[in-house]
Image (cartoon, rainbow, N blue to C red; front, top):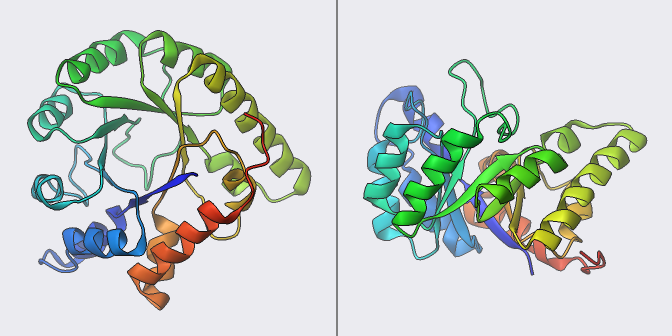
Length: 245
């Protein structure tokens, strides 16, 4: 059964818009847990535009489910992760001007830096995931440098409109999942997934966890966070697992 990781960055974005204490991401994490979240995901950006150091530390102390800390592969961020010791670190590309993460890591180009930081995190028993596009070469390099998990960037799939385009993006994702399963590397997926497009992916047995934020928080504006998480959890787990990977 696939798990659901809930990204609460947008709660912090709303808080930072006023510079006050509300809404509190830690409180949001508690409600997400009550709704069925299997993990909580936060992206601690170098510019601290939403999630703050304090949030990560409090989440690590209070969560009853694993914390997945998304971050850039920099010396500052690795030191932060080692001091906090989340269950999982997901290394992601990061640009100061982007509204949200625009694509996967180029593991092939940055393999030396990524390998160094993976080794440092492994030395403190922190699992490492690499956020990559559904590309076989990126997967092979992620495996070669000892990543524990890949998180497949599903943004292109989520943006696809025409049936043929959707089918092509799904094909890429399935190819990567098939090889990742053979390599025995963990498989997560996320970015742009919502209540309408989750079904084809939720049918794939090999995806261990879906990391979803924007859609859930958007739904929560109208339905409440606990209910929004609960609804997504039902969609992630309800479908027959009919893919053989």
